[in-house]
Each structure stands twice: as structure tokens, then as C-alpha cells.
Picture 1 (cartoon, rainbow, N blue to C red):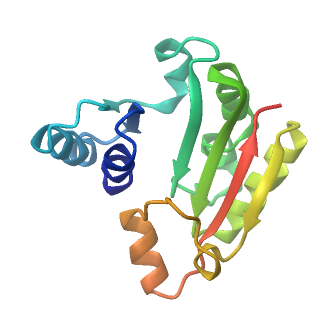
Picture 2 (cartoon, rainbow, N blue to C red):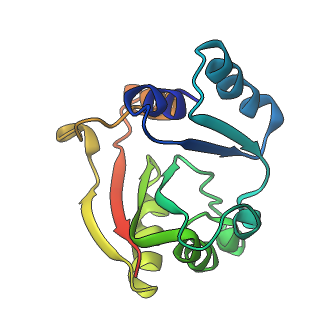
Length: 163
């Protein structure tokens, strides 16, 4: 929840909705938002497959995918949040010109994601395999980002604009 809470504090004029499938993990950013009296944060504890039920077409300006499960087995590729079926859902809920900002330490997932974005016609920018070599101003570091970068893992990041 550090990312969601940090972004909400930096941008009180924007609404932030965190989505997490695990109740024990979703609890902490919800509690932090309540404790800090941040009225621009909501946490949804559910599966992202249901996005189209929660948001109207074109309702979302930016979508952040931070350190999602890489589902490393090939047979599980459809579960990856950057698989083309998810990209189709994101294209519906994102405004025209809306963007996805994707970060991971998993190079294989990143390479897969670049291929999926390109195959689905998304415009990529700011593609890097070493985010910390040239950090993005105003980008809040996640707990996983801190943990993996301290272990020496490079952090990959890209911005994908809706087709």
C-alpha cells in the first residue's frame, strides 16, 4: 500500500483506487488511508478480472500495474495482468489517451508484456530495464521495488498509451 498511499498524499486532487486479491494485504493500505484521513483512496479486495463491472468506459485516466504476479509457467500466461485479454479490458475503462504505468523486477514478465502491448497496438514510451539508473520524478517506490532493488534486481518500467 505504500505506493497508493504515497501517490494519494502527493496528489490529493486525484482519486486512487488500489486493487488487491488478498484480504490480509488489502487491509494495510485501507487502514493507512483511514489513519491518515485520506479521502482520495479506496481499496477494492477482488480479482482484476472484474474491472468492467466496477468502472464505466473511459472513467480511468491512469492505471498502475506494480509488481504483479509474474505467473512464470507458460500455461498460466492468461493470468498475467498484461495478457492481451486484460489489455482489452483496460482499453475499455481508460480515457482516450489514458496510460498504463507498469513496473516489475521480472525481466521475463517485462519482455512478455512489451510483446503483448505491441501486439495489441498500445504505444510504448519510457521503456527501461533499469529504472533506478534514471528515476522518474514523482514516482513512489513500492515495498516490492525497494525489496528487490536492494537485492540487486533491476527494476523494469514502461508507459503504455491506450490504442
